[in-house]
Length: 117
Length: 112
Image (tube, rainbow over all chains, first blue to last red; front, side):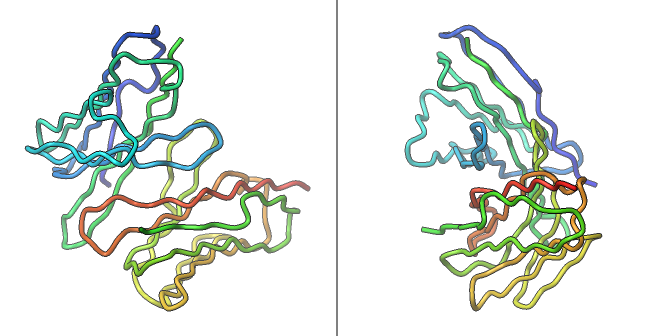
């Protein structure tokens, strides 16, 4: 079946540094990917929609200059947390949409746990 | 704006008993999903419900969808410890390629 991978699975960084998270669709092309954030004991909140070949669409309250999204190919979207601060510590999960077979199926990656010290 | 509400948010279950989780959503949707999340893990897809009256079952879990009432239920039959996890329902807008809007999740704890 379709698989979505994320790298790294966890990362610890110092405050003020930037962290890049990759989301890959392994056996299908995804023109659309989504980035979610989940704080402890909370639900998933949509951060942005990543569209291949165009600018990402950010949800209200999400700073586009802080969370840079690049969807450079049909199988890869990256999320860069710039100048990370402790409040950015969270579980980041991406998903990719598979339109094959006329159905729309969304597959979630395994998540990336970010800890900013 | 599409909103998704789940209840209860916490459910302490006894082994062998039956329980139901409810998921209400605010606007018309043609897709409803149920996911399971174990601590520290990502989401595991359980069910996709695409039409009014849809019912799907897998093991001790059964999900149903009433699009007229904008309600889905996840029914647990004879709970066992392995079912302890957080369960999310999520709804998509009626537009291809849009993100899912998640409920707050229901954390299940099964005790003997």
